[in-house]
Image (cartoon, rainbow, N blue to C red; front, side, top):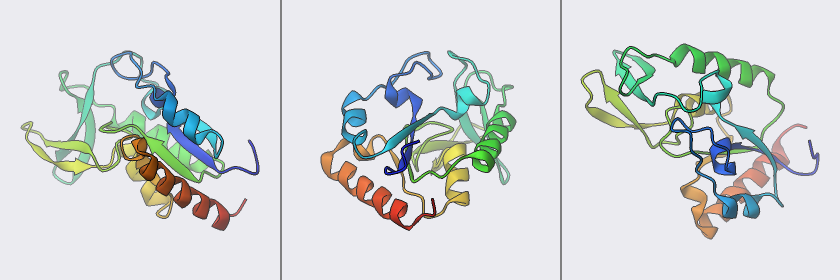
Amino acid sequence: MVANKPTLLISRCLLGETVRYDGRSKGDPELVTAIQPHCQLQPICPEVEAGLSTPRPSVELVQTGQTISARGRDEHSLDVTHQLQQFTTQFITQQPPIHGAILQNHSPSCGVEDTPLFSEEGEQLQTIDGLFTSALRATYPALPITSAETVSSPKGLQQFLNQVAAYYITSPR
């Protein structure tokens, strides 16, 4: 790890890795080129690192009472909530310091305020953070977290990098 740069989590699909549920990537080489001089990148895909395959059945967030689950979009009996929670808990307890995160839009694990939450009947209730993002926010409330979509403009990227730099300066090393 480079000590003089903040460490930034970044969704592996944004780096061009084929880890998405459909076996594709969402590579964003311009984003990677823009942030590499400023940050040490730490790739992450909570779904793959939780043991899910690529490709895999797509999942969505479903609310039952007060509980939110990651369940199969087409295979309704599929529930990967426990696997994602297990990985997330392990990651948070064993992770060296991080100073920010750029995560994939609309993902049931990584979405940033834009992941659809459905009722058991299939009605979209609202948009929320993905399960991994939600746990990061709960553990590190001041951690700068954004979506790839938000940093797609030069202004959005610069604002985010400024937040990461400020967080890094005030974080213990």
